[in-house]
Amino acid sequence: MEIVLTDRGGPEKLRIDDTDAPAAGRGEVRVRVLASGVSFAEVQMLNHRYPMQPRYPFVPGYDLVGEVTSLGQDVTGVAVGDRVAALMVTGAWRTHVVLKADRLVPVPDGLDAGVAAAATMNGVTAWQMVHRTAAVRPGQTVLVHGASGGVGTLLVQLAVAAGATVLGTASSSKHEAVRALGATPIDYRTEDVAARVRQLAPGGVDAVFDHLGGDSLRVSYDLLADGGILVNYGSATTLHDKGHWLVPYLATMRRFASWWLRGLAGRARGRRATFYYVKPGAAFNSALAQVYRLVAAGELVPPIDKRLPLAEAAEGLRLLMDGKATGKIVLEA
Ligand SMILES: NC(=O)c1ccc[n+]([C@@H]2O[C@H](COP(=O)([O-])OP(=O)(O)OC[C@H]3O[C@@H](n4cnc5c(N)ncnc54)[C@H](OP(=O)(O)O)[C@@H]3O)[C@@H](O)[C@H]2O)c1
Image 1 (tube, rainbow, N blue to C red):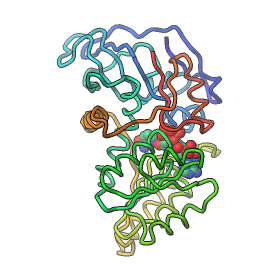
Image 2: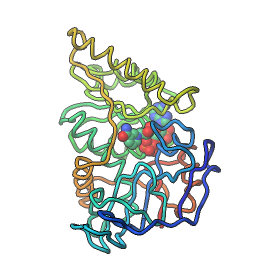
Image 3: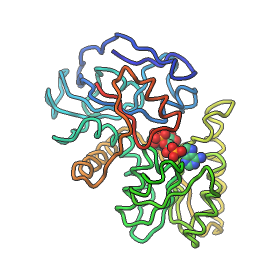
């Protein structure tokens, strides 16, 4: 079985097909999918707003956790029965997938497949931004936009564990959850976020994690302390913009270029802005292994809002689009 995204529109554009995955070829493995995440990327794909998405119809699904059921020729280092994870970008919403063996990361014994799925793309995204891009250090103050979301809940936990004071924007109904993760919540719907951040961090913040893009970037940059970094990793506020999907990214690049030039001219007070993008490869695999170690040790807890059967992927997307979820929605076999 697979879930096919047939066209631009709402969750009703998803169709369930009976198609099955082929046998594994040379260097490939066949995996029975146990769990896969629902993410904002699929919402963008429904709106034809995801950068370089495939043509409709296609099978979405950004990441998966599964069990190896057969090996193609010349596959070493993995065995039938192993539990593994992979970043797919698209194609994970299937009961079985075939993929290159070097894309697989082992899932620790005893780690629940749904929890592992909630920690896969989101965990690496949050871990790399906190520990690589922003290199958050003890004593710093950081602002996490969307602190109640799949990525945001992990960003908050990792930044708190790194010793930072964390401010997090979220809808008020989710403030208790954000507070429980260790952040001071700010209601982006009713409060003046910039004014509230300045009140809580008068000297500015050392990092802002901004998935909103568009006009939010200027506000986020202006909240930085000297030497601070703005990490932009999405363009959620431009979801319903008209025109080509590339337009908001070009605007972001222009904005970043002007800040970079300002830095060259010695007028940026050490502030920087950068874009983060999760991608498959060796760095992803080693970051995911580290994320799983943290999750297995109970030091990082990916909140799961709902577990649904794969056939109810449309309902998962609906919940995410309605802003009902705190943390991750996971599709399970
Ligand atoms: N660059 C990358 O590699 C990468 C990787 C993964 C994800 N992402 C991006 O990360 C973002 C989050 O993805 P996700 O799957 O975690 O989505 P999600 O679970 O739906 O979370 C989105 C969050 O955004 C919050 N939000 C919505 N409008 C907001 C606003 N105006 N101000 C502040 N917060 C707002 C929501 O808060 P409330 O629900 O509390 O209202 C929600 O918690 C998406 O934009 C996605 O594209 C990027």
